Each structure stands twice: as structure tokens, then as C-alpha cells.
Image (cartoon, rainbow, N blue to C red; front, side, top):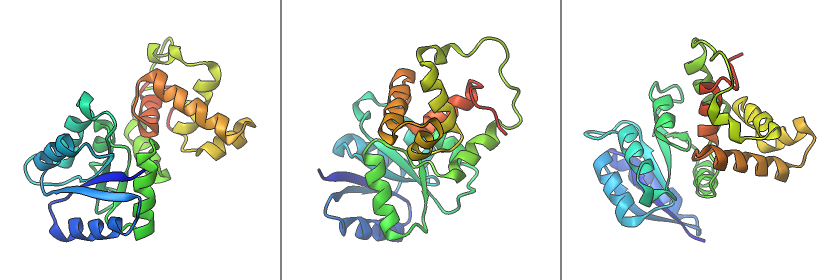
Length: 220
């Protein structure tokens, strides 16, 4: 299967550089390039890509707003957005994840890591590095823990699925979850996928955010 990619960045060198790196992979095709958020949304609707590499900061409609529009369009439900940023500590990273991005990459990413990231996201997974998890945790660190009964949104999950989501929110991979619960990696992956489906979220990143929002996982 060929993975269709749209590049959105206001810097020509970034678009051309990433495009050149991606075209070296036989299973990846660049189907469009945009220099603004508005162009990215338009190209997404015209080309229906599997993955969009989206710069956070662009003139006019920025990457976060463009991501929200793309994620909110039912016709683009199969499209995943990966945010591009210059620094891992970009203050807008959390906002991008809340908008529905499936993860982020720094623009200094190594060529093979770039191609691997596109494949991972196209397969429906998320780029959830420890730094992303820390970013999510920091946003909730000073908020009061929800009191009273568990959030109603979690009632659709089984006890094991709740346990798995709690471990996802701690930043564990499927293999690490499997080792922690003494189950197979495939079983761990199945539990994660079922939780994503039941909770109506897009991917692993959104699972982490929901876990902290509902108090299922608390900082520390």
C-alpha cells in the first residue's frame, strides 16, 4: 500500500527537503505541498492523504487551527496529522494534541525516523514519545483531581481496559504494558484499540489526554 502524504510548511526549504526524503521510500508518495493552513485544509479535501505533516506556525490559519478543521471533517476521518515544530518544548505542542494531532516531530528529525513516523501514523498508531507524555502531564499537574464517581465516559471500559489506558497514560508502549500485565503484546494492542474505539477518540495520544482529564491517571 502506498502512503499518501501532504506537506504543510511556510518554508520552501523544509517542504522540499522533507519531500525529497519521503520520495526515496517506495511506499510513500507526496501528493501535495502547502505553505499556509488554509492551503493544507484545501489539499486535504482534494487529495484525501493518509498523513499530513503540518507546521505549527504558519501565516493566516496556523497549523493548530488547520488541524482542528481537518480532524473535525467527517470526510477526512482517515487522515492523520503530525505536527512539525522546531523545538520539542514548543508551548503550542499540547494545543496541537488537543486539536487532534496524532503526534509531533521536530524539524531536525533524522531521515529514516521521518519515514518511520509516517508509516507508524498511517497505520493508525500515534507518535507518543516520553516527551509528549510529559507535556500532557505538565498541563494537568496543577489541576484538582476530579472528585466523586468515576467519569461517565469511562463506564464503557472493562476493568482490564481501564488498567491498560492507565498504563498508556503513563507512557508505556504495548510491549511494556504486556510485560507489566503478563499478557502478550498482541493482547495489549487489542485492549488499546478497543479502548480507543469505545471512547470515541482518534488514537493513543487522545487516550492519554482523556485519562488525565477524567482523573483516571493523575500526575505523579
